[in-house]
Length: 602
Image (cartoon, rainbow, N blue to C red; front, side, top):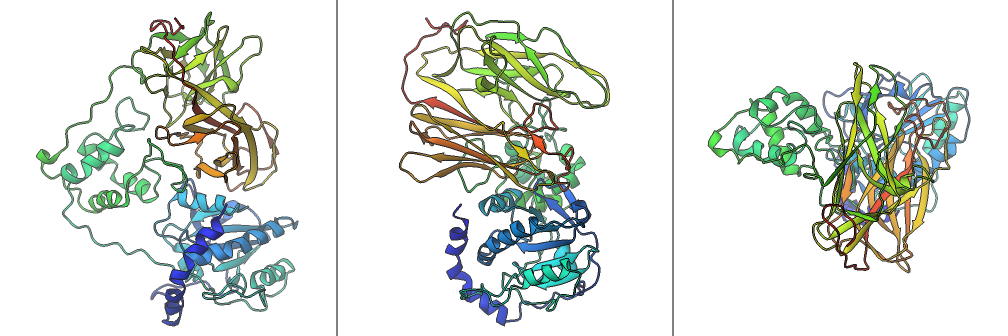
């Protein structure tokens, strides 16, 4: 979506520099690096996928050929060549082969490119292949890669058969009308035909790959003065007693005991967790360290972890007391019977109904799902529904998900639960090695002052899709019109184990489409909510909300239950869902008084 223009816009400023770098000999190999020669076998190289999981070439399975396309997120030449690679990948995916067809893979070598940056690039070009990260540039060294836009072709025996450009059409300072030689296509056709590649090496015109150089620790960073304030602000919300993280990070020893793990997750930008692209939208619950903050912690972790002066420590963070994150509820409902979770195996989704019927319209300003045994509840959704119609996500109120928040609306804003409704819970339990039980409660808090805004949830969903076996980036989309002038409060995305990314787009009347949110690296185990700044996103009546997602049903997805299955919509984890939730307030003001004890209108 405009990605080619975005990349091209920066091109003019760097063309001369790139050409100069080429002429200066910057393409020469770094001393001490040994690269595989044409015709030699390549080791089972490893990479990180966009979820920072370690994966290998062998995880793609048998392939007639593998194409590795070396990219970063800032080189303008990558943006100019990427559409060619996307077209070739689409073309060769349609060519069947007894040995598994052709696998295209984009290998990111950008030193500062985060998983979200990489995922955003894949979405921008609608790339029908996987993107991975060469974390320590080991694949770059093994394959002799000097510049981005270089492609290599490996055959079925994983021998290097071609290394070089895609074709000769795009040059640093000019573009030919048509290429005079399509080098990658010719190399692939030769490999698939079992022949020799006529020209096995060509020069690629891209940006020089930069090997990271780490300066020694400064020796000036201390825990109490420099690191503890950052941990307090960015980490302790989850890493504390009663938090969702697996261990606390409240004291010096907590960090020292996990120093290597902290270093890894910071380097890979897995923590603090944030899965939305910074290219679209601004969110008031944005997590993540700035580059200079990350550098401070990295400096300390690479030193001998000096404590410093305790007098430099910031005041400890004060957390809300009590079992409920929304504060003390006005009404608590509990499921009739506990759920018994076995020690092992897969637990089907549970549908639990709360023993209460709302006899009058009821207004709520905060709702929270609270399990008694959070270890076994992966996620749950609560919705209000008419008992004669049965449970439906259309009445979604809030969820309990890893990384998520309960529904807490701003003062003066409330959501309506209609007269005659009941509350139902869809609950996904997981086994933990011992037999367990759980009983879920739902707490509600009612408005204490006038209600001037009505909140509601627009559910954008597609339940009629079929994801083909092996598909690395199958697109599923849905649309829904906004009935009244509305202001967005926030968003959440829900898919299962094959979900890769989700994008929310507003098509306002007589305006260009606007991407509101891109969840570039969806994580089933950390389903973040994205809360907008007050009044920042307006949706006029008749705005068409489009939500599209990509699903990875390939064997390269380590979470895929069955890459040989055609996957359709379903309630269980081995099936799929595609829900985009848009939380809004209606712009038409109301003036409503409610009973603070019951939530009923006065």
